[in-house]
Image (cartoon, rainbow, N blue to C red; front, top):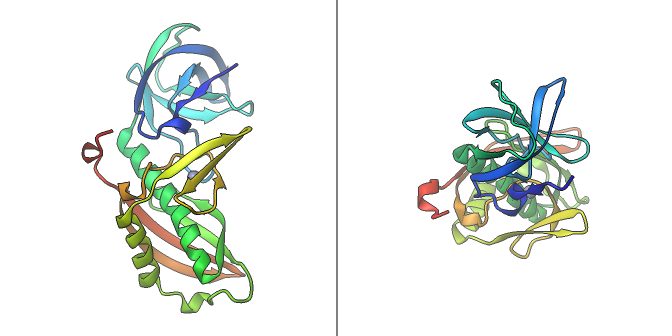
Length: 226
Ligand SMILES: [Zn+2]
């Protein structure tokens, strides 16, 4: 069953009219799947989108097959081929994309200090990236200066840079400017300049892992002309 994953194509597509292509039920309740799916399911360290189908709130999940399904949170069972209207929470989407994209940038900029990201978690209020030292020349964690890293990141954000994504086979790659292309299925801002703020909340080092906790914000959507 072919489903169009619109959220991978355009972070700023917040609504769409689409056909129901499948329905079912499992331990999460009754679900529907749409031909054109604008909802990001939880995965890759990013939370699921918040949204509505025909004004009914839905919980978003990805099945093992890759199909993204929606669980309406009120009785609603449109049959296959019904056209329904989807809306994603634009503010939550933009905030998630800013947090997630800032995580990519932090990973890239920490290379100059000798650290490479091993995992990321980009949920509101708890965003962090964990790093391993690339080699023995890494700047020791207790000599890393949060203010300096913040300054480097904020300069990059101010300058702006395009963020591109594309498929190679079934792998989606994303790239900030000339940095290394990374496999990723998350939602990104389309330019670094859309990230309005970045701050480091904590730098911690434990058992060989450096953890940088941070926050980031998206510029108001009404200023984006999306
Ligand atoms: Zn990403």
